[in-house]
Length: 314
Ligand SMILES: [Zn+2]
Image 1 (spheres, rainbow, N blue to C red):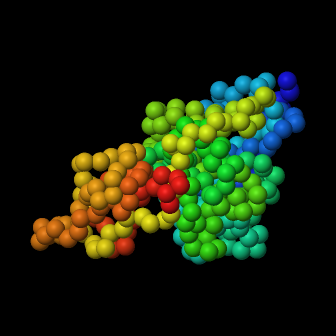
Image 2: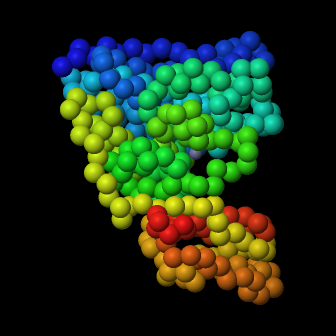
Image 3: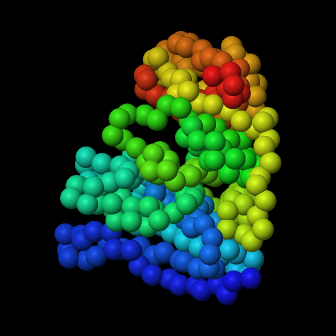
C-alpha cells in the first residue's frame, strides 16, 4: 500500500495582453509505482459538470487504494469559462477558438495552440487520458473513443454506451482524444449531460463513471474490465443534417438514449411564417439515437441528430 502524496500546482498557459499570466491548476496524487492517469475537464467553457465531478472524485478518493499517479485539471480553458462561452472568445484567437480542435498545439502558434502545447508536456507523460465534456440535455451520456481496443475496454468500465468515432473530422483539427491516441496514449472522452448546469443526478453518474475508470487504471489489484458487447457502437460521421432552413420540431416517438430503426421520424422542419412543411428528418440507419436537437430555428446544413450503429455493422 503506497503513501499517497498530494500536491496542487499551476500550469502557465500563455501571457495575456495586459501582462497577466493565463494559468490554471492541476491536482496531483502520487501513489508510487503504477500508471499515470490524467483527467481533464472544461475545454469548453459552458461544460461545467466535469469540474464538479473532479471535485467529487478528490473528496471521495481512497488514496490508500491507489497505485500510480492521478493528475486532475478541472478547468482547462479559463478564458472560455470566465466568458461563459463554449469556445475561447474570438477576440483572443479567431483562427483556433475551439481548444478541442487544436491538439497537440504549437508552442509558437496562436494563443489556443500555445495553451494546447503548454498542456501537452503533462499529457505526454500519461498512460491514460480521460477528457470530460458535457453535452446539452439533447445528448445522452456516453463514452467516445478512437479506433483503439484499449480505449474501448476502458470505456466499457463506465457502463455507458461506448461509441467508436471513425470520422476524426478535418485534417489538422484534432481533438485531445485523437491527438493522445495518435501519440500512443489510451484516451477516452466522457460526454456528461446538461451543459451550463450542474444537475445532481448527472454529477453523481459522472462521478461513478470516472471512479470506475480510476478503479480500472490506478487501483491496486485492478482487474481487467470485462467486455460488454451490447454497449459498443460506431459513429461513422453520417450525422442527420437539415437540408433546408426553418423551425425544427422534434418527433415525440423517440428520445435520445433510445434505439431507433432506420426510417424512424426524428422530427420535421416547417416554414414558421407560411406554416408549410419543408422536410421530414428520419434515422438514416438503425442504431442508438445519442443526440438530437431539442428543437428551434435551424439553418441548412446544421446537424440535427446523430445515430451510432452497433459495432460490427459499420
Ligand atoms: Zn465539449
